[in-house]
Length: 626
Image (cartoon, rainbow, N blue to C red; front, side, top):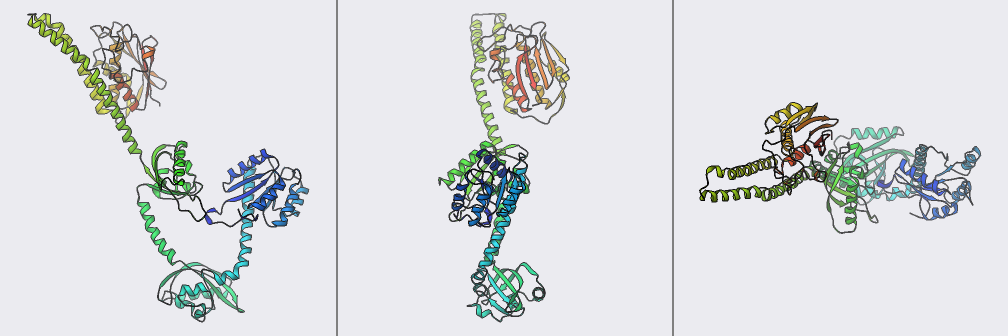
């Protein structure tokens, strides 16, 4: 702030900011007005002051572009404040913003020098109009102030201007400043007087240039800026941006030419173009944010990663393309840069695309260079799409979890049947040594066979999980009723029966769905025959035929999927959270069958729950609509 009360003309990157002093004795209304105005126009920065006299003091200490003032206020009304303000700031935009709407008040306001008059309204949309009014009067004020300053400094500017300025009458130079002499490589401006102004152009065809000069001398036209190449007195090639206009000089019509030396700029531009091509060729998104966190520059890859169009991304707040947690991570990273802890920082964030999809990104941040006296100019970032990497990491993590589960099952569940085999083999040997008959050895051999079958079943399940994991192939509509009957026909179901009640069809990988149904139906047959659900610590006897007489397994359609139910003993409430875990089994099962069921369901994007059927048995319900 300058402390003069007059707005300063700032750098182009900050020119749009408008500082507004709102004088309003009602703090609640002032807060509401500030929020609405700043929301309607982000370039507005509103400062509220409830005391009119303190507002005048504040104008002495700080710089504002516009004053927005109420009328009825204690101690000093809006007109009185305006009269006091005009003594020091005759041109500063002043808008009387009041609910006391009358022609008399408006007339007094304009008589006292108010720029505009605006009535308070309960309609929030009116703030959009007010915000536009503020921006309009400030823009006009700034333009007028710039013109005034330009006129005051014009003469001195011409003499000391860093750009080349010359006046000629078409065929000879009549005036040149110091910068013109430097640009054309002579020791003093006087050496240029009398020279043909076109003799320094790097061209053999000067007819077009002379035609432009003739038009300027004939009327009041102004020549649009164009780039020309010059050769100075030492033979050096120079690039200049040229603008011309007709003037009166020494009582005669002449042409004033302003040439800005853009030789270095052109060289930098060529270098920047090479950098731009490199950035555009990168496979990562590259961007620059301003001090407010809005996109200033970005490459095409950044547009693709964001999902926004180039026009939508330009000027957009960076928080729009990140989740709340991602924004917090970035803000913490920027703070570490500002604290000098590092020159660059790399973080993983959850980005949010234009369509709302949340995707993982790796972000490398550095600070933009600052100008003298500037604390923060923004950031430069490189965005790397790590979707595939994160997917691979998750797959590896899931694979590791499966391997751990396999190791646990192999080390525990396979050990039990192996111990059974070893025990019965040893017993059979002892009986054989004692001269037992073959019939007497049958129980040991049957026990060995049962244990071997259990190990083979368990091994098959483990191979299923290890080979296919949680992936599915191409999906097609699959009718559940015939598929369930086909699967049922391959199982040893004993006296159990299968019913289907309009299960409909689902979009699925048929092979994986067969695996799901096979494991689920087999589980129902194996466990539906018990008098109560077993656990590894509570084994039960299984009838020889594999199921009780009358056990019925039903595949039925639901509102959002299908269910498999039975009329067996069901799953106890305390075990329902564990039945899908790998390694959870009774002495009858492998501990993997229901884990396969859940894996296949989740691979399809389904959810599966276990509960109680209407007959008191188990009910496994699949929600296929997400």
